[in-house]
Image 1: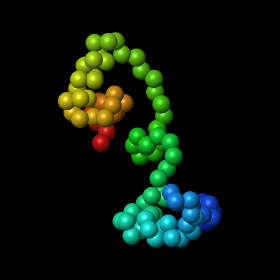
Image 2: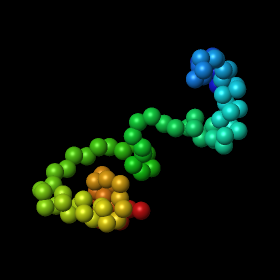
Image 3: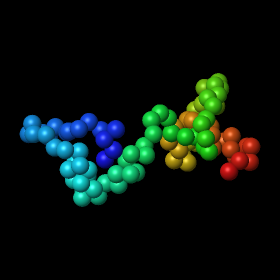
Image 4: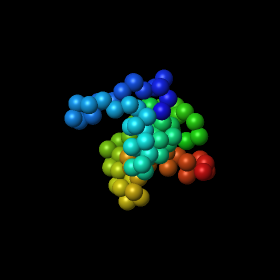
Length: 94
């Protein structure tokens, strides 16, 4: 593990201290992909090929209800995903 990003020791449940190298080996033996875990980013997930720009929209209750029902039918995670899908289809963007 990169010592710049980790404290020198980790405390175990029994109060003992384990070196980070040992912790890394235990995680690797358990099947965790350590490089993939390190690549996690903070913040919201990307909404396309780069950083997204927030856009505020207003819907009447009837439109919002229809949006929610369609999103549920198509298995979309939330209203934002449904709006993105609709705009991509309308704008002919993959």
